[in-house]
Length: 90
Image (cartoon, rainbow, N blue to C red; front, side, top):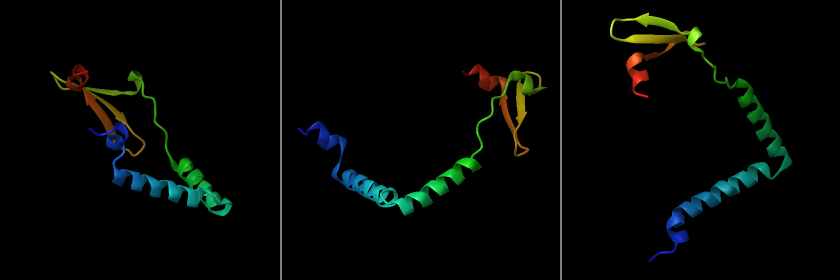
């Protein structure tokens, strides 16, 4: 019977994890490389677009008989859509 630690952390995963930690230390352990990392991270965070809260009043409703489709135009000019069948499955 194997111990829990042997089954939770197989040997090859431990090696991979070691190299991940080693790489992080090499990058963040020195002030110059950490500064470069921080600058890139800040730039990525500025480029990220947050989620948008959409209320029911913001939706366009199209009635196609048995199915009602709710549409919302996103920033990219495409549409998010969900229909009454999808909503009924929740």
